[in-house]
Amino acid sequence: MSDAAAAGEVVTKGRIGAGTDDGRPFRLGFLLHLDNDNAPAAAYRQAIELFQAAEELGYDSGWVIHRHFRQGNEHVSAPLVLLAAIAEHTSRIHLGTGVYVLPLENPLVVAEAAATLDELSGGRLQLGVGSGPFPGAWEAFGKPLEDRHTLYDAGVTGLHRLFSGHPVNSLGEVLHPPARGLRRRLWQATSSDPAVAIASAQAAGRAGDGLQLSRATAFNRQQTPERQAEIVAAFRDAHTAAHPGRTPRVQVSRAIYPHPDRATAVAAVAPGAVRWQSWIASRRGLPELTVEEFLAQDTALLGPADGIAAGLAADPALEHVTDLLVSFVPGVPPLDEHLRLLQTATDVVRLLGWTESR
Image 1: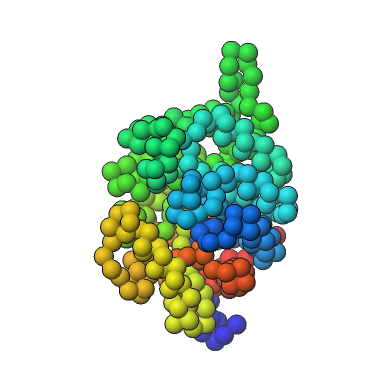
Image 2: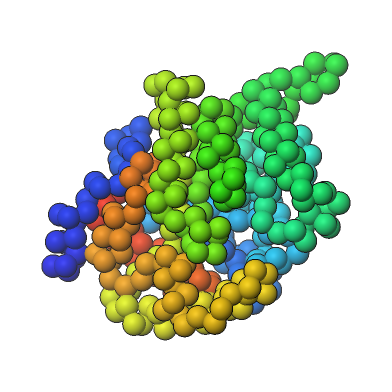
């Protein structure tokens, strides 16, 4: 460890995290994007290899996103299928969806697939659900976008009932496999819409579900770290009132790119930044930005481990996390670089007090 990193450990260690049941400040996960130009089969094989590497490095969990029709240039239209393949090549790491677009599908179908995967993986599924950001998917599935919040709420209620063993018909039949443990491993990605963000976080807290927050970017309805801290506080208050004695599960995602030289890190992500900027501009409109300006608005942390750790320690939304989710965006690095980033990210979080689960 460098002198700077050693100094960073003194400054930052233990400054984030609500604490976990095994005494650590937080659990560590990584979010896998498959936004690349590989053929789908090659991208899926790389996903398996990355999950295997993360498991060997001690990561607590790995998460895949859900995108239909290559929206966002992603390959993952069936995340539970991909995670089932990953489950067969891993044994310990938890397998998460970040997030499954719930209201486009029948919650009973989702629950059956999730329960089957949970059995195959030995109870390692972490099911994160959300309403989905792409209007084109709603059109394709024949669902009215204006009903997204109503449909999402109904879908979550359905999962709660199914995972709690409620009968599904007049014959008294119940979900099979039963997957009762999934009721405590359900997460909700609350809306980034300021008009409903607090209320949806409070609803997740009252239900006893985990809270998932994505990166705080200027491209996500101005959801700043400070605004996310307010959402976390509202969630924790609601959860504590409804479930005293249980630790509220809070997951927050942050983009990092650890490298001894920041300029090299910026050069490495520049093609992805240009690609993402072009894609965001096509959807929402975006002024021309330099790579540095884009990274600032994306709140990405790049460079030496101690500097990134200090940035995370100063992030108000991370004060009460139980699960820190790191991603290496914008863009998707080549496999060898992705493996290096998984390794060096553990150097960053060790400065914040994270250790492998024992």
